[in-house]
Length: 302
Image (cartoon, rainbow, N blue to C red):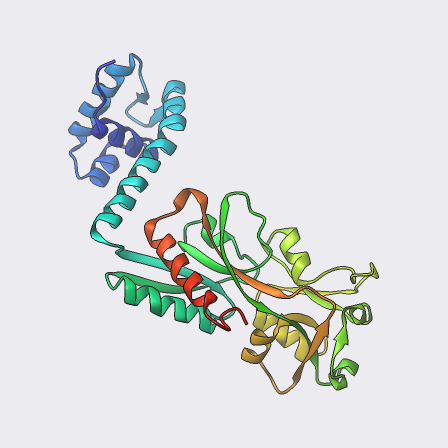
């Protein structure tokens, strides 16, 4: 086969997305006739029609669909690799979008400050992501990387720095019998209903935030489900359930009508940095290194 021209592939991929020669040309800053010329050249090298054109519609042939399925991932990987190498060559630049759940704690903010001091040409954007959908914004590329509550079992996500080890507390209404206790044991959860998380969060993650049994296997009553921390605390304040939170989150969202009681016998809470395995960039790795530096300082994981 004659050597391929990357412009031919770009034209084919744009046309596969747009299914319109004019829009594909606008996207590539080419004339409609030039897109047609590039497509004909690619079809000549393949030896078959890739696109069916009528006066009313444009669609891919079966061979066109096969070529698209094979070429798209490879072409995207090449583009991302070139972008990454360019970033390395000129230093980390561009924009890094960092997602977080609930509140960006001191370690995250310190890591952002360190990252910006190291890479002043790279802007950072801090985006709050839904409590009920910790991994969706990364999958949908709404953020480049995200700080989320553990656990993380997504096969297509990279688990980066794990940090911010914290004991858990139980948020209860000031009218709740537990509000007068100095501390609780995990087995005490069998005597209260736990507010859960609904939405797109995977089952294993939701069960970690609101377990259905105590460590000894005693069932824990299930309370209402919420999509945000604020919704959960409003229900706690109304004495419609209790909620497990780590101490810093409890302090940040503290309300006079809500009491946070330390609880023992549960695993500590951890945060982690995650990003999509297929979308890793020099910017993400550089921020991960900055977070690791901050988390490794004395007291950094407290």
